[in-house]
Length: 315
Image (cartoon, rainbow, N blue to C red; front, top):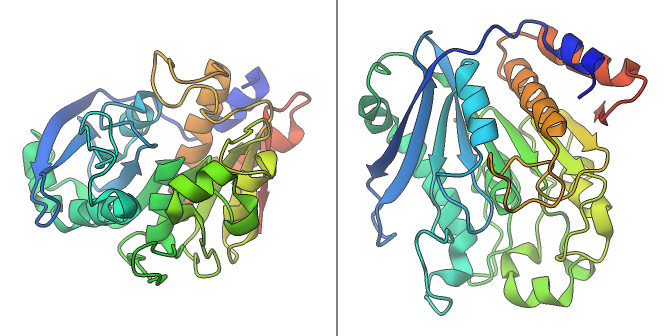
């Protein structure tokens, strides 16, 4: 992020608050065969705190994505990070009978979090009575983006039932999808079509919840033959009330959002991560009805910068 970008997106951002982070909080999960482990991060001050449930990418866990979770928590959100069954920390065998429906277990994980917010709240010292349950967002990276998208109205063709059910959740009022898969069919590589059946038939036509889609213009996914453009499908193929942040030069980890040590990214770029932090924060405050000034400032900063790190478009 350039100095001018930073100055403009600093509008209405107060100094970061100290945060408390508790893990693992284990939630009941009948039928899952394992308790649902989550991490909860929250500012130590403030009330009526909006909520972000963040879904990690394939193989990650509640321990990932510190650059996003910590920033959001330090600036007024309660961030809840479930560990899904595909996490390397779970060690699910490839031939496990649950494997074809990993995508669906992920969606159920987020719904369980929302169903058990009382337990989540009670597990964090000093958090009781401070949640704003009317302002809940779902966010996710990569596979986690599809998870969040499904809760926002995306319909996935289940490889077992061959149905595409509506699994959206009305409690979720906004979303952020980072480096999220696009259309299926001929857009998929043979590897993706064979090994990731939940990518074959996504339907974005019902994804009506306000959403910010973030894509890197150098994200050459091994899952699609279409190149970086594929990651913009969640924006272009869904109905209105969407915005798209295209990051120049960004690959799949978008500069290092997966963790502070960024061992899994090929395009480490702290300035890009800082831009994502601020733009997502501003967007969610706008989409959840908290205030609009910061989101307008973020858009203005990128549109007027002489050397922008990305562009924002909306519909």
